[in-house]
View (spheres, one colour):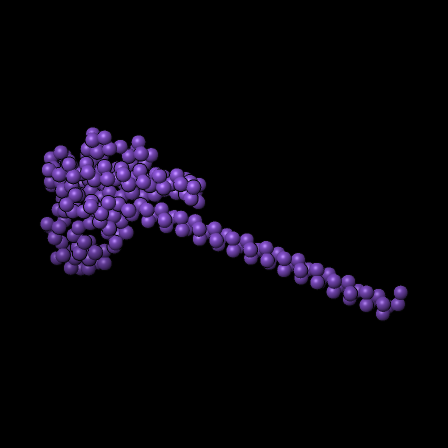
Length: 229
């Protein structure tokens, strides 16, 4: 075979090889792009489900709860939030225990609806559970045991509900009883606490004793726990 024919054969083979490689790379690109698109769709669908669950948790009875938009949570309305006496945790000393029992029963109804929702085919594979947080609080003063006091306030509400047949555990719901003392996000006397957070040198002048006493209260929240998406 002449050198000219050998050279011609080489370039034809090389051209075929490059064409084949081009189509292989094109195929891999298409497959990768398709996979990324499917992954993106799956992620968006998972996000939608999570947002729907979070929205469902917000459907607390507005008769008893109101939305705290600034802190992204729902809290008991003032007329239903137990107003403890200073340095007291005895919930039976309050006059509104019947209202608190109403609140507990309304929460059980919400949990039942959420449990029904999580068993539907759309959410069943997400393995959803719920956490009810009962958080006691105390007002800012010189009392040495505000942490323990706030916890005992939350515990007293839990026992009040249990005594009246309100059991979240039987509704397949975990309960967390906590006391934040004088820490955490305060529902009352917010002008003072915002000023402290911003380092305002005149923060103390914004302290309102009557508003601060309202922080002797309890915060209740329902939090969804999603273990698989």
